Length: 161
Image (tube, rainbow, N blue to C red):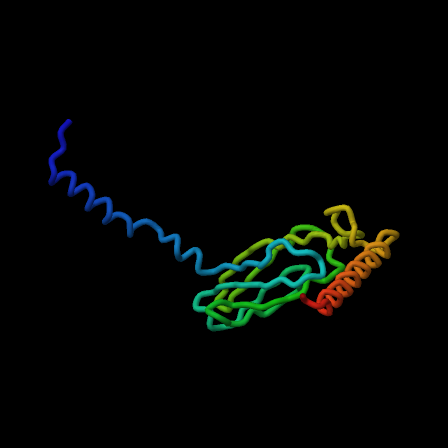
């Protein structure tokens, strides 16, 4: 089947003309809320960033561990920072945005348990760790420095022939 150049050009023009008729996905992204980081340990801070229609008026964000917060305009977005209470149980918590114009958005905050290590990482022999070998290492280092100092003084005082 042979297609003429004018017919192909007309098909391309019609394809590009039809694109604006399809719904614009950019409008759906105008209203959002996000937590940074979205996975946080209980007792740590989380920053909330949101966007409403024009980002010139404050909005309200609600989440069960954070309560009700006002996000205020800053740097072109609506932002605030809040500490997740240390007593918050691990789990996924919804974060809901309600703009002044009635628009809404949802996100999820993942809270994990705060675990403190009981000892450091196993990264070597522990030669610099306090214990029975520490005094031997300190004494050996001091003796080496002392011998170096004596040798330097003797070599400086030695007469040249």
